[in-house]
Image (cartoon, rainbow, N blue to C red):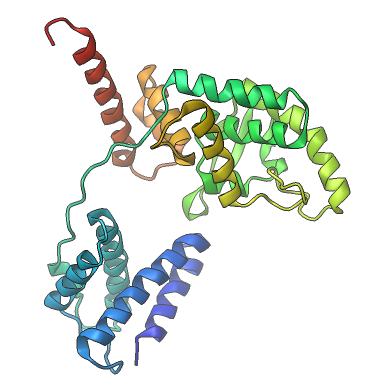
Length: 306
């Protein structure tokens, strides 16, 4: 007995009832597989049940993760998955008690999200626009990627899932499917609209050549397939490394930059929350810390008595 039946039942619950994404469900699976493997070693036998672990067992699991060199943030995330799993088991009366109630996760260091400054992004878009001006498929497509990530604050997964029909260029907005398959409408910048219009003829050529392999997808590969997340990350990182030269900058940094620059310009926090598709305002508040940190650095560097 390795507890796999209960895990499968839990994962179906996440997928069917909570409608979490495939990648999120897979992350839960990996975390629970880590716990299952630990419990088999901890008890010295695969013949254990989910009713066996107690507070000390789960604390030992956290210690095991720490000895593997995992960061506190990663351990806290894994323990969050474990908590959700045991809450489910208790609610479904598959265990008599929830042992995670007495276990505290390690307090992760609060890290401010990395973001690019205005000057860095100007350099990035100058390079991208120059390549798009050549009117090639790759050049026009890559500019659309950057424009939507920064101009509309999209997550990587949201951009990857976009279909051409989700864009309303006349209304300058895009329909986005976010976490938990929740939909929201996000504005599209004028420069993004121009970039999409320049990309559409080149995209249509690829669709015609590939036999409409994935004709609905907005962001295509040269073979006509929906461009993978990894490929989008590689493209964005290439621009950031070349133009912005930001060692800490990633694809997600463009979304962070979107939020930070809006708040710097005086945007309302609730409005930014809705644009980002955050479920909780507390998630959005971290960007106010980013703005304050930046202002503090400017003050310290500029004021003669700082």
